[in-house]
Amino acid sequence: MITRTFAGAFVVTLAGLAAAFLYDGSAGLALVAVLAVLEISLSFDNAVVNAKVLDRMSPFWQKVFLTVGVAIAVFGMRLVFPLLIVGITARLGPGRALDLALHDHARYQHLLEDAYPMIAAFGGMFLMMLFLEFVFADREERWLTWLERPLARLGALDRLPVVISGGALVLVASFWAADAGDVMVAGVLGMVTYVLVNGLGELFAEAEEESEERAGAAGAVGKAAFFLFVYLEVLDASFSFDGVIGAFAISTDPIIIAIGLGIGAMYIRSLTVFLVRKGTLHEYVYLEHGAHWAIGALAVCMLVSVGHEVPEWLTGGLGAGLIIAAFAASVVRNRREAAASASAPADQGAGGGSRSRPMSA
Image (cartoon, rainbow, N blue to C red; front, side):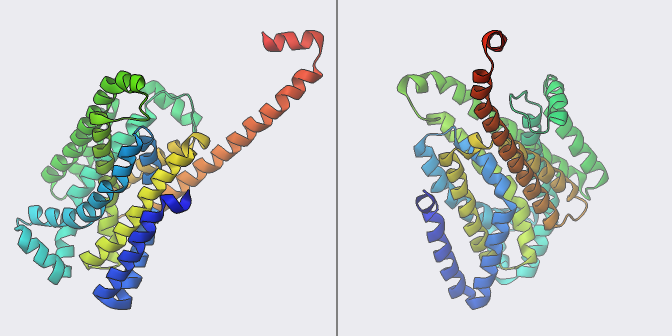
């Protein structure tokens, strides 16, 4: 299964490394390899959250996620989107923005960094909404029970995620942002995007649920699957914003950055499909919790980065640490349940007569 699932990632890796060598020799090859590892290490929480959504989609749409979705992630988010941001914020035409990217790397990096507060506000608000919607929901399984239980009780208040996210945005724009107006607009757009895309996906999922059950479809299809796909692409974009800006610390060449981050994105997407097909999220139930807490940490880091520099190792370390802790807790839970299941028949057999009746009551 590993070979089949990651075959596309292996092909993209070979093609990307070859392109990097032809473009910039051994130096380009080394930079692309480092950027790919950076993207993979920073985006594991993205794979876990994506897997939860992808599990609701049909095999056809899972393939679309690995084909069309990869093209959007690699060329759209890692190459075209930064050009658009530079063009819009600096009021440059597409041709001029592309010329800067190819021939004046320092100026291009400077313009992209100038636009980062708006990028961070958009992505931070989108991820904050995703995190809050998760922690305020009442769930059967809880990882951090002491914290998640009271949060679930607070979730009874309608639209609480919007209230908290909006309040956080006002604070960030008021006290940290150099241009409060632009940051406010970008943050509100991030919130609106989440509500719209997630809401449309849920709407069509409910509308098509009955027909899917009658047809025996394995996962969402039609409009529901399309909006889930759009939701995944926006989610990937929100995760990639920080990585694209941080990549300039390694290389200022946008072509090298796009190739390196594109290879990493392909592995993350293949890992997402692997988690779905292996049923990992069902087996290690706290992984989803850990990934969402990692998203919350990333959202906070992105909002803080509107006015203060946040090192990449901190955001990556927080995400990796939370997911590792959730995985370890899942393993402990599974072993405890297995031990309880193994001891239950022995206990029932050892207890005789009147002792067995209270247990079955």
